[in-house]
Length: 127
Image (cartoon, rainbow, N blue to C red; front, side, top):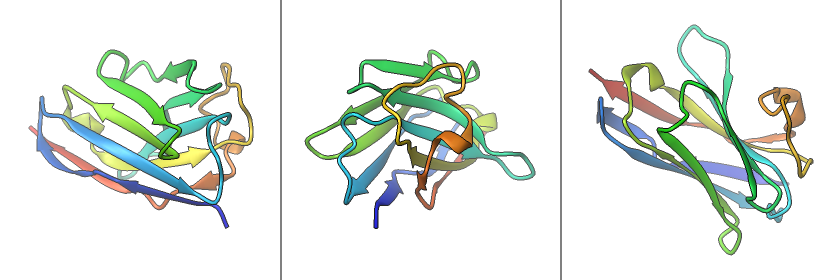
């Protein structure tokens, strides 16, 4: 069974930084798309970013462009989300997800493109 385990969440003040990790077991992720999603209380889950094609292609939600960076370490089979200049509106449960596809286009944030999900890690940003 493929497993995705997120870590690195926590509580920070606005303007601070966090780095989330998503370790994948029982599957080699190097050629697949890996995404980060988040869900704030009372809101639908939304796509944050995705990395595809051996890390050569990335997409970001407009709300995080210039502040968040996705990367992957194929040797560790792990994907990272570096979050800088955090805002209170970034408060959410963050999930990583594995796609069977190696490319992503305008539909990168559609959840149906991902078939494995982690349990999530909480990020709380205070003002």
